[in-house]
Image 1: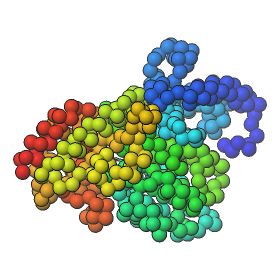
Image 2: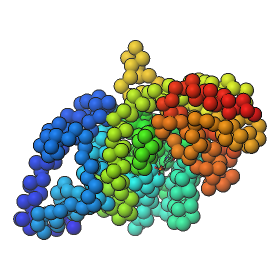
Image 3: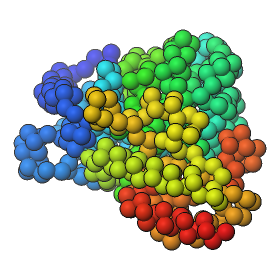
Image 4: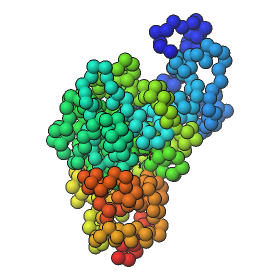
Length: 468
Ligand SMILES: Cc1ncc(COP(=O)(O)O)c(C=O)c1O
């Protein structure tokens, strides 16, 4: 239904009634915005008042597993799917439990950015990337063609497949790859008036590439196009790209945000408004991109997050900052060990001073709300690293097969340490040529360090490497 359509007075009754609920939500949001990161992560928008007045005092957000909502009459039923009242209607469209997750992620990603933010959660990280990019690639009646977008090639293998196969091959749009995302000149050379957006992963999985986010967002703004950042590996506890001018942040909520490993999920968080020169008939497209995606493309493509998964994510998010602090410290210890091991010929971890992008990453990757004693935030670099085993690819496989407590799994962000060989797993589909461009040799092992005591992890790695 269009909002210009004449509404019956009986429908308006529900709209007026819903204003009270919206005002209450706004009040709680404003209160939470003045709180620190950990307080927001722990409580989100679920307040003591709401618990007592509507949920029998339940301390944890209620889990709404029902697929749909019942209404009082036809008028209320009509107002709901037209978004005239704050209702949820049907779990593919919205759900009260996923609502809490969206609100807390919008607040965390917008924390200390000085920007208003909104969020749409999705069934997976890849669904978030598909839904964040697809509306920006829509054909325009009079827009310039052929459409292209510019992306770092140092991205998760599934994202590479989405861009190169689903979007480029199947839809005939052009993706222009950037091999060295830290090199602004390479980006400048690839953008033109038909470019719809820039896309980067920071830090990247598995290479640990990084870029100058401020300079890149300035470049995007100069072309009036949005910068999209996949900040899955950093999480808002270490990096909030919107504070450097990024327009849209995407996450695999599956990863460090839901470290227990009990749920798959994704999120799109946008600042309000986003930078775009696209002429879209719905003003929300520019003004509130994440909400636009949630209300329209999200509902039509149907990649909704399960409310059960939303609750798993909410629970793990409460400890995000402290977890990323500990896991980053563990990862640094493991990286320092690997750096010195004679059977390892290269370690990529942005926290190592020897890493070629260390000083760039140091400007951006900081533990939110920390203090090094002189009023500066403490640097933390996350819990993902990669290392290259000396010798032929067979050596990497041998070391990998010897791990005793480190799981061999195509996953990351867990509370338990996990390792994979990306060339034969996460980045297998993209083929040798694209792996070469993305710098993913078969000798590279990706390790995501968990919360075990790092001494035990080092012992495990040591015995595996010494078996060569
Ligand atoms: C950086 C990054 N972005 C996105 C994704 C896709 O997320 P999901 O597996 O939740 O679809 C992954 C998955 O590994 C990832 O590592």
